[in-house]
Length: 259
Image (cartoon, rainbow, N blue to C red):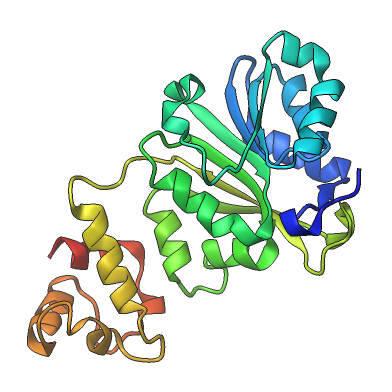
């Protein structure tokens, strides 16, 4: 079974990293877990040991055949359900599995990290927790480790609480990727917006980050219908008009969105 570069396959081989993912997931027997891209099943095996009921989605049909053989007993008992498909194209709201509380635990391909996070945080059936193995720089950006916010970090924080758990070195994978990874946990995920609020929030967020080097006042003037209106909104939210967007926290953006 050779990893396919086109699918971003890097199989996790570190038992220490696997143990940390399971510890962070805090699983109980009978918990529902969605695993994305199980690969050769190293994480799947650890998930099944907890007694969790696992739905694993794998795009590579050769790996699906391999996994069906490897976990023949668990598939037969329906503790493990394997789906051959693209995680971004499947409508999980139509699946009976997603009608109960569930967690997403996965080593996901770098190139679709943002799309996966967006799909499940903005979907109707949100997970209660996500434990993801992602590119280290992406994890750091999501938690705003450098103290600077971004569209990505604020988008995640609007729905849940991201935590940087541990660095996972590039040597923990086969084949060895060019960059290091990290375990990212997003917990306390909730429905954060009422009707219409979500669209407004993201419109003003994208406007605010339109030109990163400009002050917030210049970036949001158009969306507020002029500088004076924008200045009034900023003052009402207690935001210095000379601040840059990356220095404004989630509460500030929500306040502007509500105005």
